[in-house]
Image (cartoon, rainbow, N blue to C red; front, side, top):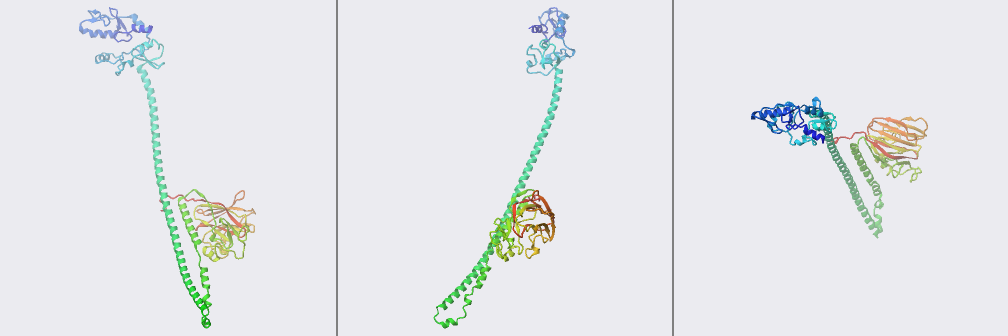
Length: 533
């Protein structure tokens, strides 16, 4: 309350601010020296002077006496630093008042505001002129002698400049962060565009891959269907020809039968006896020979079609797959290459001698051939004299390995060979004894590695019960491993392969068995969609 009363006493009625250099008129009213001087200046033209407070008249311009007491009160109750001196009135002015304030160099003009209330102290209703740094708030002159007495103060301009510097620093940091954010956004947009381009490219690549895959499968299907049709046509021609011949034979036999019946029904013995010898009439040897010559080539046809299908699918997998392992598959024995002296199990994974106790067939001096006579075996590519058999699979690219259980035999050879290896005769048709085959051999308890008739004997007498064969076609390597504990590398042949390779097996006694699955790894990189058509 004392602060409010003091503010009224120290208030100039003209500028409504705390007195600056207060002076007194003869009527007793006090004003700022500058305020009353300017007021008297405006009255000079009217020919008379009056007090702005009580309207007392003065004939002459009144003298301005300094109010020492009021001046002392202002200085004692409102101490300020030189740089914080009151600099004038802040207000929105009309043109006439603006002219007056422009003459005062200590007055600071600011932009007009639509709400003058926002520029006044909410407590004292005075213009905000200072900034309290301790409470971070704008204050009026009465606040400085009240609640904020003794606090550090700054002019609004000074405080504003300091805050602007801080804001400028924050602005710079924000601009830097905005720039970094824009770079991050651009980087993400670039990554997204690259991902989209990659996805589009991958989509097109896969689509082209499947188009080519479907075309290759369609071509393979067309070829196999054509082969089936051609083979069926040849069969039908064979059957039709034989049926026609047999029909003619049947007619000839029927004619002979009728003639014989006529002879049998004759009562004249002279006529019967004068008839030529009837032995020729009953001769059927020719028909028997023809019947033996007739055969059904269905098994061979199916084998050929299966081979074409397998080869075609393998070529497609070779084209599609690269650098990954193909799911394991069975490696099986080709009965059409088996010798007459071998028995092939129903699952086509075990080869054994005919007299081996595991065989269901009994041994005989002339064992039954697979699947027909010895002559047919020669026609179909079977081994003539040696107890050998090849796999149906062949390898013309990539890496492959499989395992063979040889514990059931003491006389065996296991390895690989070209399909063109001689299968007739004696020594040239044994795997390892020609330049088209490579093998590991056990004979008379001695292990050797054979190629082109040259052998490399393995040192030591370690028993080998199970072996692994590994072929790397492109690298030209065939490796043998003993799968005993620990696994031991036995030998690696090196060569430049010029034909596909088949797994080859020789069984001198007992049996050998393919163990596990065939594992394959194709080294060749996947061709692009447009490669190879």
